[in-house]
Image (cartoon, rainbow, N blue to C red; front, side, top):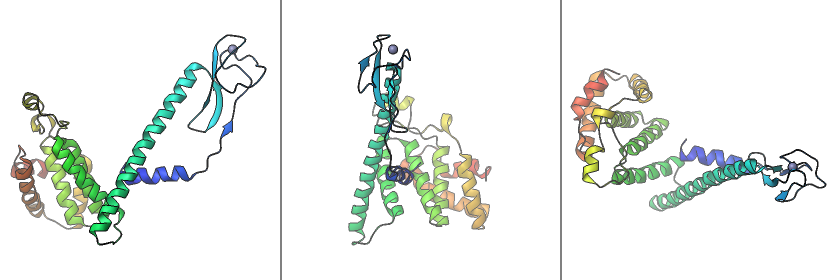
Length: 252
Ligand SMILES: [Zn+2]
């Protein structure tokens, strides 16, 4: 799920009016015996001596009287809701900030959502490259290809999908900013020997585009080698672009 999908689904949820329901009963959740009044907060049951807790469930906003175990579970559910909400707020703020930067850069013209997504992905690329998180870098490039395809910029999309394949064939790893040279030797940022792969979903997208563009295999090869030779140099990848083509050629 991308930033925008999250943004959309979350804003839909917050628009829904939620009504708090009171489902508290004058009954002990432990021994199920009747109580003289409905508990308003943590109380000890006069029958079994166990504690009863009052909580609001996040999923339906209902107030309920529950056991200790149930209360712990509801508290955990709330922490998950809060965690997601934090990410949502942070992403929304980041999105708005990038939009403002682009608006200035565009001389006051309103940037599209894709412009903003593209700008954020570019920032992610820099961050992932800096940390040696090449798996994440590859995912960001894939998302960029998806934006290009969505905008019907098929040649640019194809070039970017071919780059994703080239990165995949080089076995990208996430090294999380690790600087220890000994460890990097053991867990290299690119490890084609152990992690080289091709994603069937990406191959499928490439096939669909080349069919639409009526491209021959030679033409695809030319785009692949030309574009990825530059990537090879700038990222210092272990498998040459020319050699990677042989692996991809069999699949498309
Ligand atoms: Zn009880």
